[in-house]
Image (tube, rainbow, N blue to C red):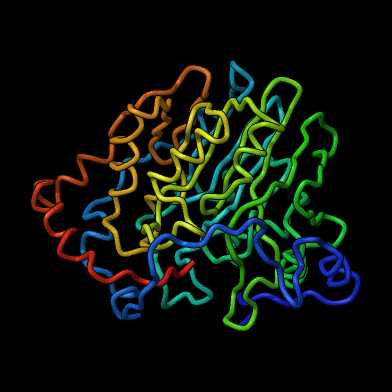
Length: 370
């Protein structure tokens, strides 16, 4: 199955093996923070056939961004959340497409695996011209085979962590359009003054059981002369958040994952509470929650991540961005909680009943599938 990708070989593999993150025969996290709660198993049937509250009962509100995209952002920095971790970032005239996923499932198969709640807010073919595709790691909910196949027919360059280029080449992206980076390496978007620095993340990789950690994973700092953005991708809590903030902050926009979480996964996924902790370590900045509202990748209810984030943001002093799917926002002026999701969430019944049910369901902690 071509969607599984391809392992690195030759010069690409030699460069991977020269990385300080390469340990033995795979990549490893640095200063690894272990989970605070034990992992337990769960039924694959429960995961692939989720109970009804793991996905919304009605389509989530969306906005078609194409009209807004025709006009450059007044502040020079604008972000459009297109679902899960897919972002269209406009920074001082440069357009960066981050972790693009337009496929119907976070899976190598078109028939099984987590299915997206609804179509993306805009067709892939309707995107404006893109200056760079930025990839964080090779999991199916971040590196999507049908999306990459479509982008391979364009001239857009790709930036990805070490080893991920093997997948891209296998899917038709020309070698000269692929740049692979190790942590702390800097890349300049061609023809621009925008730099992208690959920074650590505490996560893992792999598209098959036998390829775990055979490619690197990363977060990114996206830096122009006027603005600085942090994209946290997938990560658990790690000491590097403080280091990144000290080296590159303050940030005009911080994007951190809040979904697909459980306390026992704190080493590889933040969740809403740890996202606020990471946000503080980074030094703050307008906070855009990502990695939620698109796929059921954990056992929690679909809106739990955003509700828990909103509940803790006030005490933390966080300025949240809560855009609808497809809604372009400029962080310098558009912060503030607009709880658009609650109208759909109310279809599941009173919050008190849902919280009671959550307590009853929390006895068994699943292993993450990502």
